[in-house]
Length: 435
Image 1 (cartoon, helix red, strand yellow):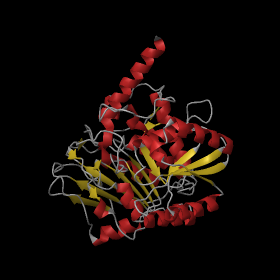
Image 2: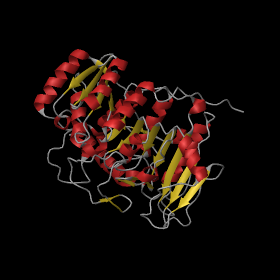
Image 3: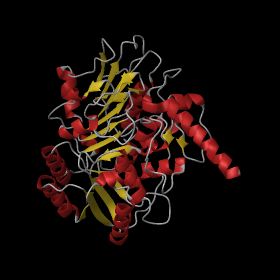
Image 4: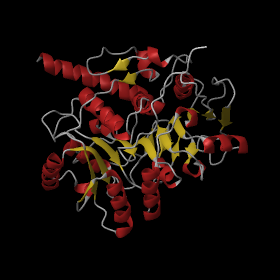
């Protein structure tokens, strides 16, 4: 009974966190930019943070490490066309990987498919598993089915491999993604060039701006300058601003007037960034008030992290359609921000299929990459931390008949990282010497 009561208490805390922090959107009481080191690291055993901490997303999910079951590399795909298989064969050769073809990754969660793949993976003992679905197979239950498969390769409840998702909206963009992947080299500190974008929704709702300020402080400890852009909606008439050089502001004339182009100076700085990090509301086709048409073409934006809702939304969904999103935005049928960024030349993209918790889950991924970890290791530790926090177990991942469009526990597991799981995004960063 004591364990049951503990689980109920934990779930209530988690529900409160989701309500308060979803999409970086709840209002804060006072604008502060804390040092990242003072933010509490939260796991299942943690005491409930103060309400202000939750309201401002001023905490970080504590990651859960778990050794992979082996050293190999496996690619799972349901592509059958040569225009997709040739790039995958190129990647398989580059990574010395085993390429496994299945009929339909959208049905990955089906018992007969799971059983066969589980046996093969247990024999192959991979360290990395890249999942390469057809664009119409990329959907919620495909991802949840992957977690069902990849958490059951040994006896514990955690992901047993380092995963990554390889998907692009067309054969040409898929080939280009794989070509960039094979050529990719970890970005050094001197070449990192981060750029932070935040959305300021009102005079009180400023926590996304706060996250840009936190990132500036974090990168500054490594001797790295972080240009910032803050997009102010019409309700943010008296909201605070970040000071300093290379801090741009765009004020929208109407809430739905998303940014589709930038000034020449700002555009040049954004195009030159190697890493773009975004915090704010989102819907299909928009992240932080930036429209997919505003994503710079011909840029150097290789690694992109978005804390917005729907930044990696599938075109075909297994879940009930949501008509509105946090922030009061209407949800339409538009391409995902992630898909457009992959088309425009990104190699790694962090996002969410539906309702994201933003900074608390995004930052530890970035932090892990800054330590020199691979794409897949950070992804695995994120999902394992959520599994541990929420108490998910085999049989509880896939949603067969969702009845509530917003309160699905599995929503927490719908983080997506597009990219080869074996890529090391950044060289390990060392802190700048103190003056």
